[in-house]
Length: 106
Image (tube, rainbow, N blue to C red):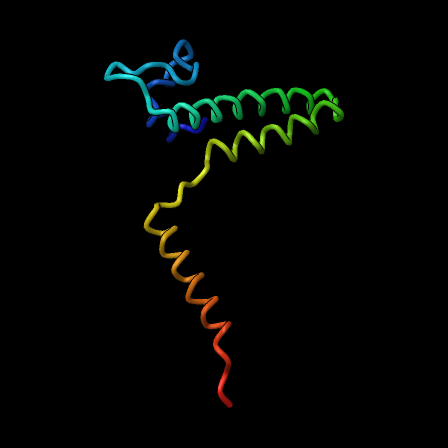
């Protein structure tokens, strides 16, 4: 975890508190945050294992860890599209379909 994320994640700021989903003093974290923190924690751990396998030339172990790292990293850094944008995309899609169905005049 880089220093910027560490600074913004007080629940994970010390080694004793690095378990994802720990309850904050103000209450339980929401499920999406807990999932993101867990995926981030997993990606950090998997990256360490992958680097250890690579350093010892255990390539058959390294490759599956590489895939697992990318999956965990992707889950930790997922971008949620706001509902308003999704609605706008749907509207554009409908307009595009309507334009494709209208015959062109020569």
